[in-house]
Image (cartoon, rainbow, N blue to C red; front, side, top):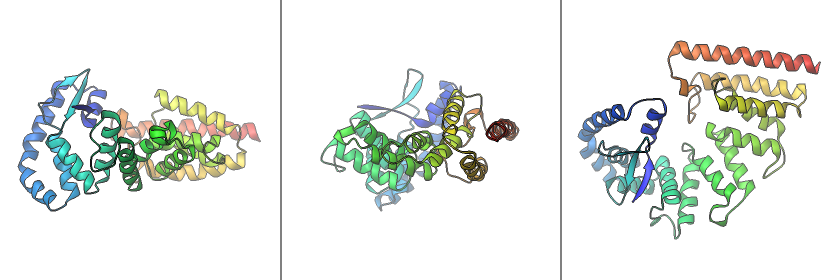
Length: 290
């Protein structure tokens, strides 16, 4: 039996929603979605990957699952939840491929039908999901190469997938892509591209967050190695990119400022704060370089 954190519940708890409230929400969801199960099973039997994925979602959200250590956990065993996760991955649903790879790697789920070994199944599933740009698949595949999982350490492959993820709107990859590109890990340095990605991450976090402060420190270190002409060139591209990100036009893993809520007035307040800080920072750089 394996234990997997259920993402929705984990997110709810991280934002302060009580265990009781989550249990009530899941009970309501389960009651509503149970009516769709017969139709979904018919579609899945005909090879509908999305229907199989939805059935996994249904069976893995049972309100009977217990809380442990402050998190709602889904118990993945050789039952209906795992059956439909496997079936959805077999049918090529990218989120199922990514999640199954994660479960095989971290929870020792049986790799049968997906590879002759645990490692082969993990790389095969992650690669399929990453090529389809499934949420965080590029990051998790890059981490496998970076850590040498299964004896396959390759910084060039890690660099490729962190960068591919960043360019495919996976903001989970932005900081690592910046690190690999700017510092020349796994390939030649690309200072402007590395600076672009650390700046993108910095500008999509609430400036009060610890991570935003960390990103800003990295940005300032990178800026020391760039000319003002290079900085201006990146800023022009960055402004267009951030405008799209803030407008929700990019399919990011996490939308900007999501952790602070999505109320319109709050978002406007955050954006004004970030713009004011960024304008002041750029003005200071321009004055110091001229």
